[in-house]
Image (tube, rainbow, N blue to C red; front, side, top):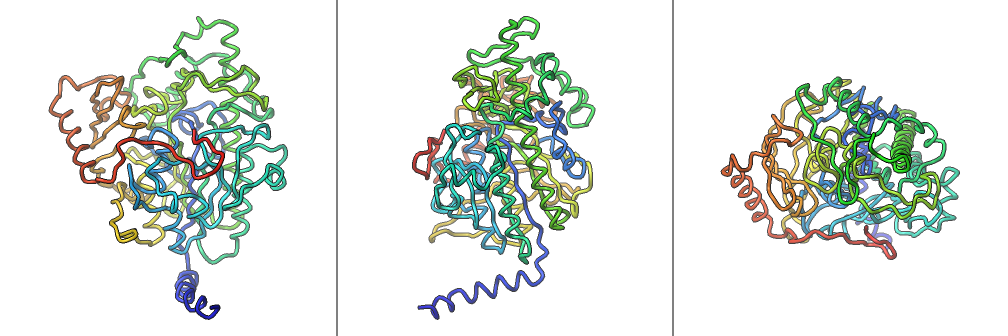
Amino acid sequence: MILRSLLFFFPLLLSSASLSLADDRPNIVLIIGDDIGFADIGCFGAEIDTPNLDKLAANGMRFSQGYNMAKCNPTRSSMLTGTLLGGPECQSMGALLRDAGYTTLYSGKEHFDSWVPLERLTAMNSFDKSFCHYGGCGNFFSYEPVEIYLNDKLLTQEEIEAGTSKPYYKTNAYTDAALRFLEETEGEDKPFFLYLPYESAHYPLQALPEDYQKFEKLYDVGWDVIRENRFRKQKEMGLIAGDVVMPPLVGQGKDLYQPWEEVSEEDKKRRIEEAVGFAAMVHCLDRNIGRIVDEIESQGELDNTLILFLSDNGGCGIPGKTKNWLHPTDPESWRSPHAVWGMVSGTPFRRFKQAGHEGGARTHLLAHWPVKIKPNQICHSVAHLVDFMPTFLEMAEAEYPATQDGKPTPNLDGLSLVPLFEGKERPDHDILITGWTENKRAIRQGNWKLVKEDKDWKLFNMSDDPTELNDLAKQMPEKVESLHKAYADWRASRPYLPEKQKTQSPYVGSDGV
């Protein structure tokens, strides 16, 4: 039996050895923030102190049109499969890179739509090493902690805290695990793929006291001033054209907009606490990203490592998640930001998380790869997170399989970003979609975008109107029909697509929120 096992693995060992003799393929680090909008980091206009992300941007590339799927689970599902909406034959980014000779590492949040084949996509099944929890959200402190798995082992809270920074804080714990994984790979003659899907700054707004104190007076001026300041900075940076006009601030549900001077003093105190808590969480996330970058640099690998940072969707505009008014530094607090802060997160765009509008689906995207990307570049080409799979496969010199269990695999919906990294042009996508389910769907072809808003379809020319102020649907019904047909044809070519999108949990005890 031992001899048979050795004979079986011997070709794989030879293949791996042939790669590692001179394996100078780049490392890949993919980092996700959670519910952090387009304008919520310094290099995209924020007043929030994010020195590590700002440094990556200064030495790399910012994308002004970086798109996701507008919500946690569809973003992760599409990104890790390379498909906008997939089916049972979808492939795992982690597994494909692992099979190509990469050491694959995962630390953070896991969340999927129901069409995702869990037997191939879960972290424990598709990455060499993983430290993750499943579900939409959970406490950041030891109070009511989330369930975390190390590979396929459910850890006790005592086991988790034994290997993490003190005091326990979930963002730090993800980084601690990732650093251990990186240290264990040092000296391996093979590249690594590190996937870091953080949960910060998803509600509950829970911040470390030292981070909260840093921003305590910053938001006393209120949301109107903060938004105007961000917008001005974005124009100065060249992220937004000088003639762009912002839509008016609005709320959602019971979280209605009021000019700041009309907000009651009691309510101002609450809204300031929310903004300060959110800024503190983003700042903590930035500090942890700096720890990762420092480790990669200490290993001498920074120049040959692609680091991508994005958020899974825009700012949170979903009211009604606040269970109490405890201070954001209290481990028992459970608060979400007011919907107006959610729109400020997406400055200068409309709407919030879940919506196919720009405020829900367009967030910051930055890339750092010194051997390919010149410093301080801004790319205005459209990029979508389904572009990551073809990008990584090209970098890894890996093939995308044509079949799975004898059935055809779905076509990849993205295009490699490597030409854009090199400052070259790239063709447009045939079609892109975003928005949480068909109720909030957006369809984009070239500069034209059709988006569902309050049961009606609206049409925008994104080259002239990036903030979606001028609905052309009634003026151009033929363009509306053309985009609907393009989407119908796209769906018809993929008979495996689900009629409805749902979440699912592969783990006992998780809620999949």
